[in-house]
Amino acid sequence: MLGHTLCVASRPWCLTRDSDNGVGPCVDQRAALANAAKPDAIISIHADGGPPSGRGFHVNYSSPPLTDIQGAPTLQLATTMRDALIASGLPESNYIGGQGLYGRADLAGLNLAQYPAVLVELGNMKNADDAAQMESSDGRAKYAAAVTEGLTNYLSGRAPSH
Image (tube, rainbow, N blue to C red):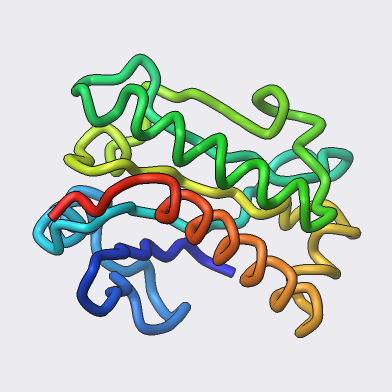
């Protein structure tokens, strides 16, 4: 499972990659594509490569925020996404961040976002239990349902931005 960025707007959503082949556009280009869509939310979906003993998801957000939109609106998206992942039964990361959240200053895609944006590490590819879940169709369906629920909950809690 490689990284994909999902932009959600009132009009149809977009993906910055159509497959897991190659590395896709650079993060600056992904951010520009996402911003050009004028989305209600940007969700970058990944799987981490942490220590083999580390397990669980974490939701990254820009911290410290570089713009107002990266402040409270983005933290609300991160928290809502985290809550949906927990509600689905997915474990929070036991090796990075805290309580399923991880504020980062070093992720260009988040720092360049002009709309609420998070990068969700759904699990750790180097952990046997996480890897098995990510490789199974039932596990992928569980991740997809949880991310969808998080996004739905976030969007229903605020007025559309356009």
